[in-house]
Amino acid sequence: MQPEPIIYVIDDDDAVRQSLEFLLRTAGHTVRGFESAKAFLEILPELRSACIITDVRMPDITGIDLLRRVKELDADIPVIMITGHGDISLAVEAMKLGAVDFLEKPFDDDQLLAALKSTLSQDADLAERKAKLTEIHDKLAALSNRERQVLEGLVAGSANKTIAFDLGISPRTVEIYRANLMTKMAANSLSDLVRMAMMAGILENSGKRGR
Image 1 (cartoon, rainbow, N blue to C red):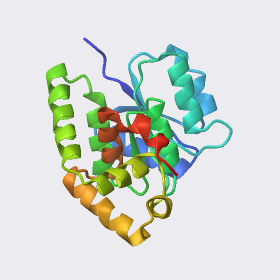
Image 2 (tube, rainbow, N blue to C red):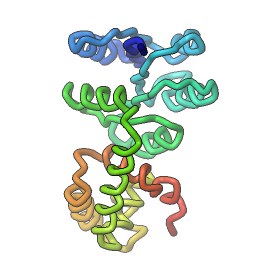
Image 3 (cartoon, rainbow, N blue to C red):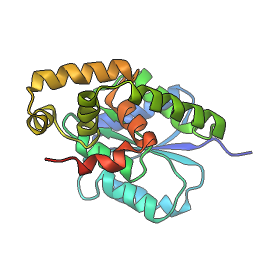
């Protein structure tokens, strides 16, 4: 039987890290905290059953650098990234490198615990994944051409103003399309949109949009 994974929280902000550790322990998880990616990398090769929650922006070794090391080691360890406002392009890069989810600050406790639960149960059967993909494609098919363009801009990490400039529309109009997207795709957050886009193959092609 697979042992219960240890949750590794990596954040240079002591208050944030300790708060996350307390939340996760209260929820029944085994947790270890690290104040830097450098300290964590010393034990990474030895890990077996684990999950990583890490901030994107850290001194010396960033969350993105850490994710690259996990990928280089071919370690089967899921990584959840925590990003600040304006770090969407970094979050998209992280998902391209294999991060399973990202959370935008500020997020509430329930959002983090739900993301962790989803991450730890990603070994769902193939039929369930196939049904989910079919559902996503059905939702994408219901989007207008303009909504699809705005979606591609969002998952490429572009700000509303950049998308507006690229499409020749106002930022306010982009906000309206973005709200429509969230409704039509039944997405609770931008991370939901990016995850669905990645599953549907949009993420890989979004960077090829015309400027």
